[in-house]
Length: 139
Image 1 (cartoon, rainbow, N blue to C red):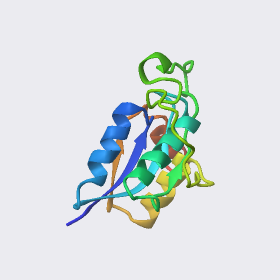
Image 2: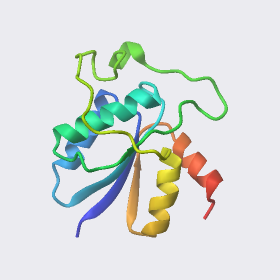
Image 3: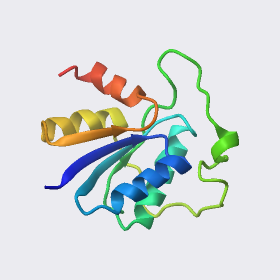
Image 4: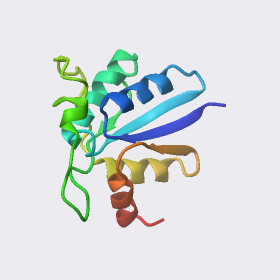
């Protein structure tokens, strides 16, 4: 049986490796990715998710941009650790795909309503998108 996963991540080097790992398993289907602030800012994390998914041959996976800052504290990113682009400043070209028009929280709410009990959430960044999804739809 295939495990269907939504990944919520601040896609820097470590989360890129996690996406590569998931994509390499036939029994795991990445159904969506949401970006969040953390290793880098949310817009760059979303672009990195697109880059990694394209590299894995999963360019059909939707990527939604998520929360740009924490709910109750200032934003702190780890530019020094992951580089300004989040992937070690390797000068990667822009991804071919596009970020979806919904937020990562909206994506979580919509997809969980469409497939109740059928999806797993792998949240490997700050949990801000999950908090926003809960605020939008506590059910």
